Each structure stands twice: as C-alpha cells, then as structure tokens.
Image 1 (cartoon, rainbow, N blue to C red):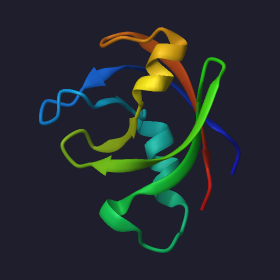
Image 2: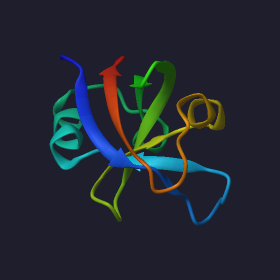
Image 3: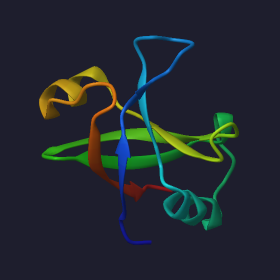
Image 4: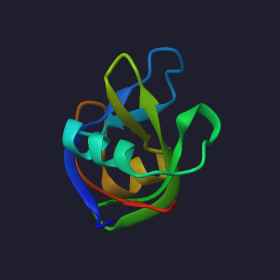
Amino acid sequence: MRTLRFTADLWRWEAQSGWFFVTVDPDASARIREVPRPPRGFGSVRVRATVGATTWMTSVFPDSTRGAYVLPVKKAVRRAEGLDEGDPAEFALELLE
C-alpha cells in the first residue's frame, strides 16, 4: 500500500488534556480498514507517521464516535513542527502491518 496523505486539525482529547490527536480523513480511514491484518489491542494499526520534517513510529486507533481512525501526536512532534491545538497540518501515514 502506498502512503496515505491527509490534512487535519490538531485536537486535544477531553479525557486526558495532555493528549493530542488528528482525525484521519474518511478515505484514508477506509483504506486502513481494507487491509487484512492480525488483531491488535484496541484495534490499533502500527504506522510510520510524518508531518513536516518529523517522522515517528506510532499506531492509529479506531474512534467509533468519529467514524475514523485517530493519530496521536506527541509533544516532541508538536514542538518540532510548531503545532498547537486547532492547527491544520498535512500528515502522511505508512502502514507497517
């Protein structure tokens, strides 16, 4: 599968105010769901994520309330790329499984 690209706004998780995510767009979420893989905790899918000049390994998680996957964006990434809550950014995801 080739790299999935999307633009999304950074949002803060209400249950844990220190956690930030972006919602993977519907088309990219559908493509992630299509790929057969062994089950993992919480339905997570391992990815290599890139925003700007920063690349990191993480997982995306299905979010039933949003109907899409969500990507956690750690503090070091936000700081390196100058991202704050509500900021839009272009992300690239490479599925690792």
